[in-house]
Every structure is written in structure tokens, then in C-alpha cells.
Image 1 (spheres, rainbow, N blue to C red):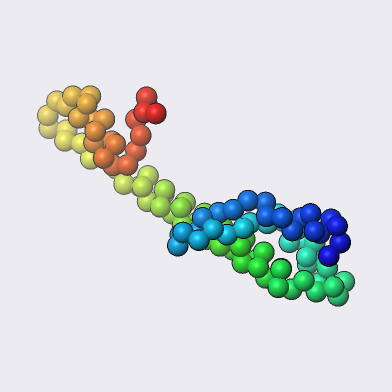
Image 2 (cartoon, rainbow, N blue to C red):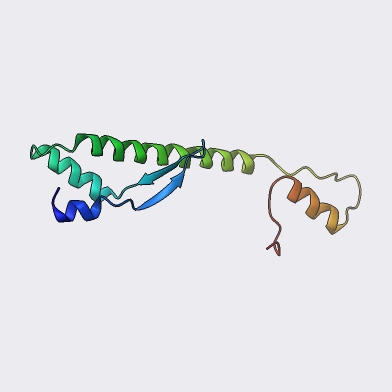
Length: 105
């Protein structure tokens, strides 16, 4: 592995997977460099497969989170409109639905 590839082989960041396991994520530049090495016949196939797996896992985690947030946004906050409600009651109902209210820190 040449010096540039060695530098690129350092993980760009880590991501916690849904099972709590930490996975290293690598830059696209590193994955591309590994693919170029394979094409040249220097074969770092195991590294490429690992990096590809990490990318796929990160995408799956992101897509799952997006789906969770979309489902949350699709669920309306139910308020009892038949009575006059205090601001406190409305704020509590919104928070109970999993949303924040302006001014929450």
C-alpha cells in the first residue's frame, strides 16, 4: 500500500449501528483508490469489501432514521378541540407526541 493509500485508509468517522456496534466509515476517495489498486492488480479486495460494507451499513442506518422521522411527521398531534385549552396543555400534548416546542433547550 503506497503512502497516499495508507493515509486514506484511516477512517473518516465512526457510526453507531442499530445493534450498538461501532463501524468505521471511509471516504469515497479511499474506496475509489482501493478499486484502482484492484484494477492495477495489487488486490486489496478484503479492504474494498469492508469499506463497501461500511458504506452500505451507513446508508441503511440513515434510511431507517429518515423513515422513522417521516412516520413521526405523518402522525398529527391530537388536541381536544371541544374545550378551551391552556398553552401548557397544548405544549405538553406536542411534547408527548415527540416534538419540541420553540423555547425548549
